[in-house]
Image (cartoon, rainbow, N blue to C red; front, side, top):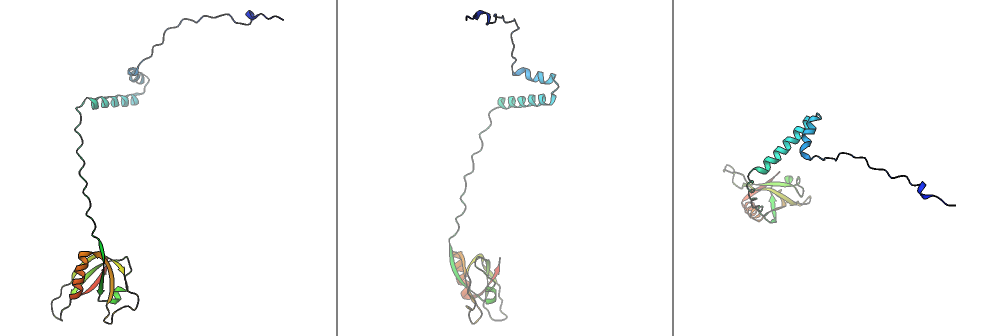
Length: 169
């Protein structure tokens, strides 16, 4: 069997003539948007383009001011443990380790003398409290406070000349 190849191939066709395509650039987008009734987006596009053009034509901005040198926070004073005898043992029973207290000194003076209490330490952290029954016969109790070294010296001096009391912060 012989087949005729020429009868199965279609005849060549010619391409019709057409006008060349013209691609418009970005400059015609605004006009086209206005013609199609999209006024708000077109206005936004025009304002953005104007703002960008002005930003590039202005003189260069002054360099930003140098960042201020960061000052280091003052180093915290190292804390020391200061044993303090508080005059009222009942007050000490209210304290727990971790509490913050102010220590107040009331000078020992005879009745009728002028006495003025003063604050010796503020915001001292209670490190240890006595166990029940560990109080003196005169009613005082020993408490250990964590304070800076200078405050510990003031507490020791005030403990010799005054009766000490605490207030919870």
